[in-house]
Length: 402
Ligand SMILES: Cc1ncc(COP(=O)(O)O)c(C=O)c1O
Image 1 (cartoon, rainbow, N blue to C red):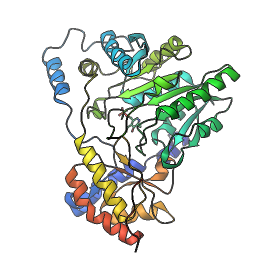
Image 2 (cartoon, rainbow, N blue to C red):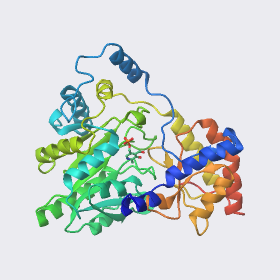
Image 3 (cartoon, helix red, strand yellow):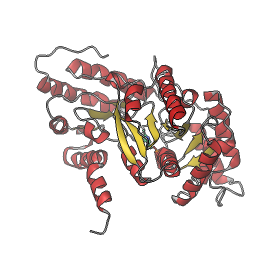
Image 4 (tube, rainbow, N blue to C red):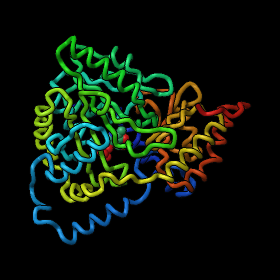
């Protein structure tokens, strides 16, 4: 067997989303595009903002002399200054260019941070349900993932996180707004976490870093607001990405920012810059760095996600499903009816609906709907959701969403 047994096992364990996506392509061939409702993949819906496209065009037509050359591994200094300015305005913290590393998306940022922080065997706490890739990112850095459960309705449970800490804990991976649940953590929850980590640091003398993965922070629904973890938790590293706010996941542009308040911030940043280089990213794509620098404060609106969210939450509740309305991002994570979520996922597939089983996110008994699709797809799927409800909740009335 040429590849490592660990990678072989990871492929088997971690391919739910891709499996469902590929199943979608097959089903579309078989039944026709309009009879398949593919809610499997978090691929953002819609075109990039006009301002960003215009900047890309200008850069391509009249490139600055240094555009296509090697650069500092952390990225262009003027781009990092602009990111720092925008982060400082959001958090009230004195971020400077020296705290910012441009990365290949949030995935690049997280891998860089974990590689820089972890020694083999160090532990990283994941809050379940979690973005499935976290598990593998931690393993990339020879770390050990340790799972803490969230509180009911997927709230952050600082006490559960506290219980998951050990002498080997180096970091906690937080994701707000959350994939797959849509939970947006409150200021109070984050402050409670900070208190706990401060107490622990005083007792042990070693900090635990919070890696705050925030690619959905601009996608928040009425009645909810994003509170930056860096504003509440002292030892924070911010991982951001323009994959979801600007609809450019293929372009691989994001950043990692070490909070100026974090323990040994300079040292941590230096380690991250080095890891950006030796993990093979070298630097983030240069044209996109320059393009996003001018639009850091852009606040796109997401009317399609809002419509899809409201339509699906109402329709699923009406059909009998137990679903927590998401505060942000573009996912629903309802409870799967029946004893085995795979049975439900299979029944949904028979109806032409593709969703991802909760076990792919560390939480069985649920399934994920990615509603970053056209409103027409959502509307066309409604009769199928109704039939699923009638099959799995015979005789039940509608439920009021929480
Ligand atoms: C929670 C979360 N973190 C990180 C990523 C990776 O994003 P990027 O495309 O910026 O690497 C995703 C992508 O879906 C995500 O949902």
